[in-house]
Amino acid sequence: MKVAYYSPLPPERSGIADYSALLVPALRRRLDVVALERGHRRPPRGTDVSLYHIGNDPSAHGWIVEALRGWPGVVVLHEYVLHHLVAGLTLGRRDIATYLAAMEREAGLVGRLLGLGVVDGCIPPLWENRPEDFALAGFVLDATEDRGLIVHSHYVEERARAAGYGGPIWRIPHPAWPRPDVAPADLGDGPVIGCLGNLNETKRIPQLLEAFAFVHERHPNARLLLVGAVAPRFDLEGRLERAGLRDGSVLREDHVSEERLWALMSACDACVSLRAPTMGETSGSAIRALSLGKPLVVSDVGWFSELPADAVFKVPVDEHEVGTLAAALETLVADDEVRAAMSRAAREHVEREHDVDHVAELYAAALEEAGGGARVRDDVVGEVAAAAADVGIAPGSPEAEELGALLREARVGD
Image (tube, rainbow, N blue to C red; front, side, top):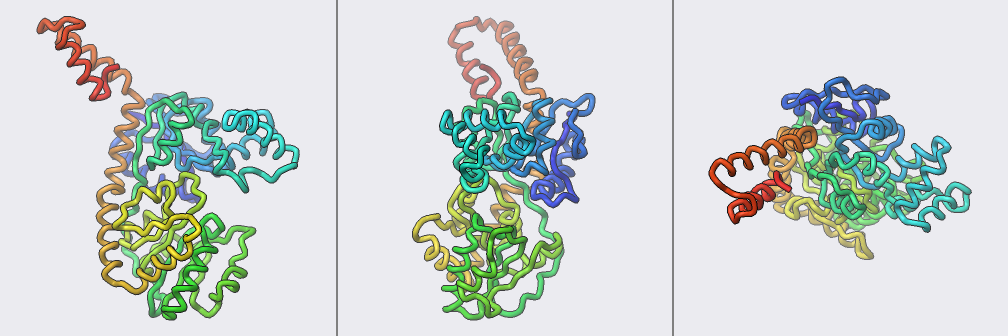
């Protein structure tokens, strides 16, 4: 089976590029996968099904959406909220009408009026201050023409159904990277809590700093490791100052190489991956941490809520968030037995659910169904009907009804 594969790819600095670099080799052991170069829209001759990886960055995924709209196929929806993507493909190209239509589809007349307010400069851009309220995923869901949707969580599956998507949905876990043979970085003595990824408000960095300050008062040898680029309007230095964390208790590195990322994460005693509001995304950083057997603290939202309770601490995003987070961090700093138990559970979960070959098998099954499922189902139903007639099972008989029920249960018959 020939698959046209649309995705950002290395050397692009994109989590989805890293994802595809991991998945494609495993998928190629099962299918004929042609990875399209950036900007190449038309599927190659002989393609059975096209696979489109969609995220929220218009610079990385704009060309992929344009290809999808010309040649519908199966969409991998890496996050549900796509407002920034849609704004870039519409308002970014002076296509006001399409943006307003997307807003109206999402929220009726109120949505259209809000869109007009953004266009006229009367209100701030919604993709910056309220993206979770106006996901605009319908812009992409409509373009699939119900060919099929791959998601990583129940959360995104439920939101797609609520938006009226009627095509097949396959829920396939995010693949895990094999544990690399990299020595842990030397971060000195004392327990280290790691937060690795872009640093901004939605990653709950202010709440993390406040919670860690409580922990550091009780455990002065504990350190917090922050790795990643700081969002343009996020004052990290000011936040550290206000939290009283300018005494060497916070270790800081900017964007790092893949090898350095693994070395730093390997040196952590536990990791933190907070998120609110959620855009329906999964976290490659969280998957890496679990694959290393690192106890993990997450926000109790979206995909993160679906992680196993024995491998992660889940922190509700409520008025008690900082206190709950501080208690979780202190437990991980102070209790070796808890860390060991969570580490075992994390490794077992990754091996069971996120193994890349397991994920590739699920992808192959979904793509085979999308590319030839209807034809195969018709052939099976035809053969069953012919066999039933040969043994004297008449249409409408109890035996025929039972056969029909079995076919429907196997997702073959209508």
